[in-house]
Length: 260
Image (cartoon, rainbow, N blue to C red; front, side, top):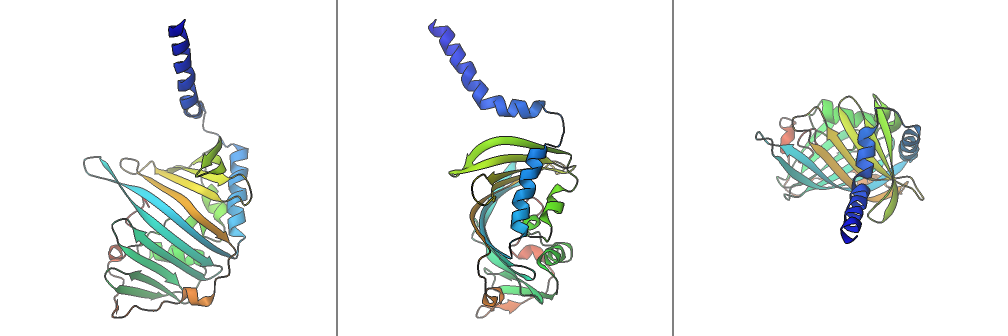
């Protein structure tokens, strides 16, 4: 009898641990309208905000030639005032620090460790500037999809599957767990159930990349529509800093590849 109870208990615990995974694995590719509606509600709410102030702790995998995955990460602080002001501060775990500033007329990339910065003229909105920084300057800005003019269109483009993963808790916050798939990536978002429908965690898996690396982020702070004055988006060069041309974007601590 004791043995039967033990086996039953183990089976029950195993079912609790694996039920969600097994259920998800057994589902055919499909679009769950509930998951899609919750995603649209969240990113739509963000896109309607005139300004944003958020802080993110992130990790990303770098796949070695041996196939081994090594994790790197850091913290990002993002202040955006639509349509044309942006400041992103970067602090990596290895101590490298820098920032990206857009004042409506110029894009400035700063490497605090080397005390150098680069500037490029650009006049547009935040979304177009992020395209410019990535396409023309070769600098990847993670989480850019949440800052563009129409994040709903960007995040739902090319969807081949959407699933609702159920209710869960992230750092004490009750969330809806949403999972999506496109031709190239899988991504999961955990969105607050109560109050403002804001993302609390994000995981992206790059299926087509060697070793299928991941980018993971936890949103430590969200402030919607804060008062962000012009002074926040003015770059004041540090004493003794030197301006250099955009010839080696990788020297600036903004990104180290698509896994971010």
